[in-house]
Length: 90
Image (tube, rainbow, N blue to C red; front, side, top):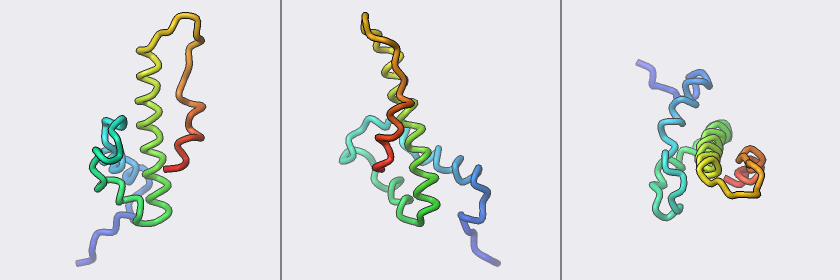
């Protein structure tokens, strides 16, 4: 019986797996977070790229949630979308 190969799955299913692995509380300090999910990034460039995109999406949602709940008078409404370039260092 042949073994299971994760990369044989369609990209949509792999991304669904990453969404379950990415910690929902992305505001934790790296030393407090469980490093095991992030070790998946070391598998290959394709997995790293797909996983980083999922982490970026989670961070953007988290920051957008903070921005929506923080209403400072006199400041224009902001979005985390322009911050995507800053998450490329992951």
